[in-house]
Length: 336
Image (cartoon, rainbow, N blue to C red):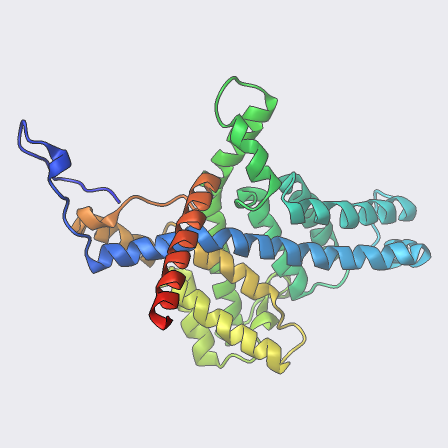
């Protein structure tokens, strides 16, 4: 946390003057920022694992029955500019190699691009499903943002963020620029997309077929119309991103467990994890409120935390580990 607008008298020793005690608002903000830094890499890792499992399962089925894979490529989802054997081999290679790269976070953006392209083709020329849409949305996120701290990419790119120019260094800097510039725009598109789907679910409007094909409407089957409209308004306006994410996650998980509809799956929960961790982004009520708070309370607003910084994650992990050990020691001491 940084303090703004405070100075010390000329010639005074600043080391001997204690700073103002942090208020409850600053402590709460610090706790939330620390938890976001700590838990986002685990959420990101879980997302990559679940996405990888979905594609590896499909690839394994095709690898175990090559003739069926060729038949599907020829009859079910043909690609006009590829032969059936070439299309089947290309799809199989992508479904077996790219998911493993995505899971370990190595060459994450190229892997996400290949998987997203494969899924878009399947969604367009085969049977459109909400599972495809959720996978496409998460893969677009990884294409733009890349993986978090628990990844090989985060490990090896640390040596290329500074120093002499070169192809790898330029690629790393381009990835960082893409994450900073396009990442917030993807979050905005994501929340508006989900909000429009909820409005369609509540029958506020009747989307044309071409639009309905690209809306995950059935992912929220079971929501009452009034609740769907409420969530839609909050998402589209970018209001209370974290509470909305948690509430909608709870509702979707409850409907998934109860088996309301086969299209109600775990994937929306993963996608909402991105929204919770990254916030509503620009052009949102949350962004306006945060800007007002920074102007109104500049001494407690603090600096924006980069939750993608692996060094910050390791430092936060060590801090929480030490805090947990201290609390555990106090509990053991009290019992004894």
